[in-house]
Image 1 (tube, rainbow, N blue to C red):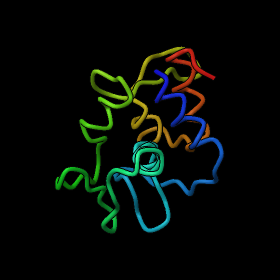
Image 2: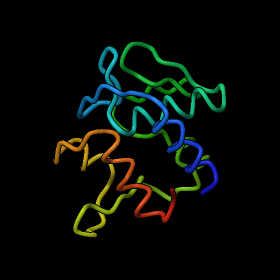
Image 3: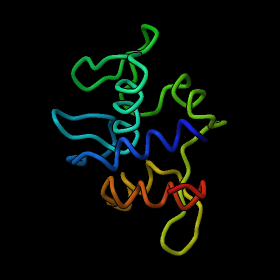
Length: 115
């Protein structure tokens, strides 16, 4: 979870315009797009080609790449706990419930017991 804490700290240290249902749209990101940007900045791996995050020659436009999940130590989805303590995929807080990136980061930190 050390890398996840680094990513959350990176995201918290910046202002993010929020989009939904895709990693990036112009200068806006969904929570998983912000995670990809943090990964790119922290590791030097991957790049953006318009709205797609390219990693190992594969284009990703809607979900976290497997390599990013592995680096974060996640078996699958990036999870979060909402304000009522329910476990939910972080992207669903962003995409379906309209949470901002800072709100979603707080819910991720709550689920993984991070700062």
